Image (cartoon, rainbow, N blue to C red; front, top):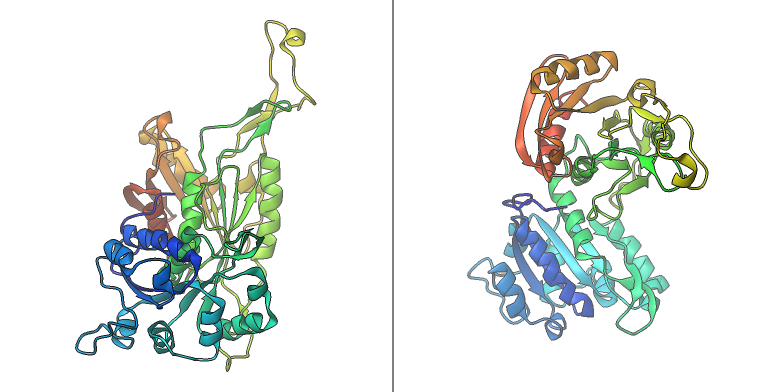
Length: 425
């Protein structure tokens, strides 16, 4: 997915880099932040400078790197003022040594002093040898940080710098980026709200190698799910086609047929209606309460209107079928009409190619299927499928709101702004 260059506009990020071989990956993380419009400043430990020269970060950020040798109290170039400047602090990579010191409030270098002085949420991406990572003391340190304003990202299993394969590699820069953006862009309305998004054109088998489908790419659903994730929602994306760069910790279900989509959707709606249990965020906050936010469903999937009446086992042979062959079809199940909408806000999607009748047809869909809103996409031609941009008419029983053509992620944010108005909480 293309990251909009204004996604993190005016956001200020302090990136802390410790002495791990994974420090080179932090260069890509800086590039992603800067590309998204964020202002980035870097603080490095002395050991980190052995892996990546400060000049490299300064070239990417156009800002001087703060380290133990250059703290300046006549400007904001010190561990107090720079943390007051930042909207978010990201520590990537974080060594086992740094994790241990953070958990015990040790501040014997400039990076640790910044972390101790920064009172907001901090994103921490560990990087360590498997044994160091799984050491019981390291695990206890993670638990301590988890209740002290740190979001700790999962490490990866892959070949490590020590030439062994195991758990301990730092999370990918794109996943650190998404988690950071989620922290910066979260919206209390969407935070912890369960939301289901369906997408892609359903795949209806004719035989084991052939199927009926349509041109829907699933990009709009992927963009919508990403926007919801960034706003803090608990997202479940059910689709036949995924964008390749979705957050890895987003819940995704890969389906094919409309019947399979209906089964997973029905189960997801049932789960979504159950209240969530909150988790304590601070050591002194030991209370757990129920989060009872009304769930949402964005039905962006292009479900086949007709499906093969019979599915052939194996592969159909033209030698047997002859010169002509008729494929028998039957009307497909209408998923939007058949699901239980009680207790859930449902927004349908409709694609039309006739601009003159599009609004009227969307209005009929709104009424006939008992929806809260319809997102209408008026297509210019078949090549409009799979594009990276879109324009939407957001239609409710009361009004029609036009969302101007833009990249699909920004269009998704506008859809969410309109969807918020459908419920008070």
